[in-house]
Amino acid sequence: MKNSAMREIPDYLLEKGEFSLYNPLITEGLKKKESLSSAERQKQSRKIISSLEKAVTLSGLRDGMTISFHHHFRDGDYVVNYVIDRLAEMGFKHLRLAASSLTNIHAPLIRHIQNHVIDSIETSGLRGELAEAISKGLMDIPVTFRSHGGRAYAVSSDQLHIDVAFLGAPSCDPFGNANGYSRDTEDTSACGSMGYARVDANYADKVIILTDHIVPYPNIPFGISQYQVDYIVEIPEIGDKNKIMSGATRYTNNPRDLLIAQKAVDVIAASGYFYDGFSLQTGSGGAALATTRFLREKMLARNIKANFALGGITGQIVKLHEEGLIKKLLDVQSFDLDAAESLKNNRFHQQIDANYYADPFSEGSVVNELDVVVLSALEVDTEFNVNVLTGSDGIIRGAIGGHQDTAAGAAFSIVVAPLTRGRNSSILDHVTTLTTPGDTVDVVVTDQGIAVNPLRPEIKERMKKAHIPLSTIEELKEKADKIVGIAEPLPFDDQVVGIVTYRDGSILDVIRKIRSDQ
Amino acid sequence: MNLISKGFAGTLESGDIFIEIEKSEQPGIHIDLQSKVKNQYGKQIFSVITETLKENGITNVNVKAVDQGSLDCTIRARVTTAIYRGCGRTDYRWE
Image (cartoon, rainbow over all chains, first blue to last red; front, top):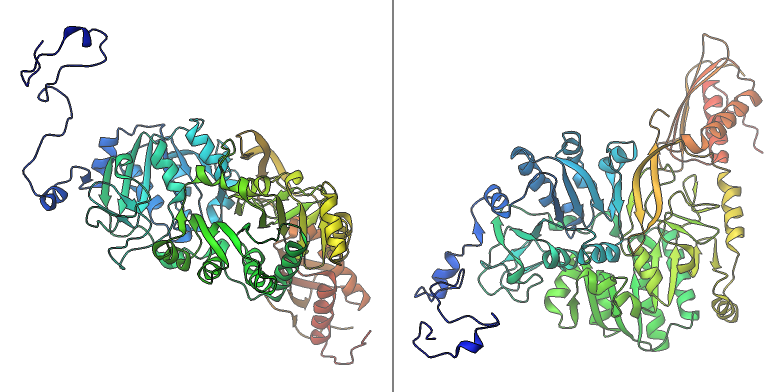
């Protein structure tokens, strides 16, 4: 048979249906040759949609579907509220909101939950008014909490199917190459790494990029590739870059946090995992962040350099990198603007997605290559279980984040906490909510003492050799009880308001409704 | 001791407790407590305030307490100070 170019093609090649005959006129969607210049084609990109409403309609979003967002803007995020407001106006109902995390700025969601625009929520954490309202029974369906690695796995394995992802991007070109910064202009609302957003871009059925900076093609380097992006909508502002650093990543001058950080560094130095070429991650929270500062001195004194740091990258970590003390940075989320700036400028500061970071079933997950991680905690119990999700009042006020993932992945995990906070003890018989199982926590460091998990006798020996004074976890608990007294049990109802999942999606614990009549 | 005016002590700083006491027309000790840790430590805070008042011979009193996670020793100190100020006395018995 002859194809449309009048070349003779043997019939047997077409019999299995593996090939068809060349005929560009009938192949649907095949890009036709155009005579427009590249500059003109960028102007006419069909991916750029004039309004969010139109893009939503094109995406095929229907009631009951799952929409997703990332939280790289932390407390400065405008995208979630902007999009849900528009969806509410358009009359959507019963949506499932699957955000990588939610913060104080998302309190307006309360109204949308009451009006059934949002029926259920998936997130790593909740804070502020929204968290309080949900703790007091705002939602009929409990919130599902997942770690960053757990979420990445749930999305990539389709346990959590995303219909439409709404991803804010500080820069995007007319064909969808998007990133958390731009090398073309200083004038963007930088958020640094887009690690969580990249998972959604990979797996969502439809991807809508919201941006306040459409930059010339090609926007390189890009965090999200053009082939994953369906529509692009320009909005006035996607976020406030000055608020990226607020909330969990505040920088500390608190002497107690500094004391804890100093002790944590002594523990690291004696752990057997402080060697030339080691790897580390520090979590959010005052003491964990401050650890980096003291670690620097120790590294200089012992002439030790780190192979890589993972995170949650902070300005402190960037400084060590630029000083040559940490060779490479792997960045799923930039914790402050210095980190965002470094991602843009430093060649060995690499953006990674959340699957790469912490997928629990992937051999190469970076968390599995960690030597040391320093993590914060709201509560620890005598089984070394950790709570990072609910306060001592039983109200949700935190996020699992990468806590579970790094504690399980790292060879050596340190949890830092002040022994008491106000009148609350951090060391209890049982944590209010179990978010990280105790068998993945190796050492607890408080301002009043250090306890090694009995599952790690070799660590205990190394601490003793280094003359680091140790307590048992029970001794720490007694010490705290002497100061604050014994708390009465919290007034929980039976209703479950939150489901805490482990990395594989199994249920680790539940959060119950707290009675608000007290 | 005898309350002759309102007595105040303490601040609204974290870890402190603000205490305001005033003679009550009704007999007995009436405590209005606001606390972030009322669920866990409310009873304990009530009993420390009550004990401290009784130790100082104050029996008919309205107490307003705004607690920011204070420890028992702080509560005792603030209540005692509020009593002395309300009674117009400065002859503290330092322990």
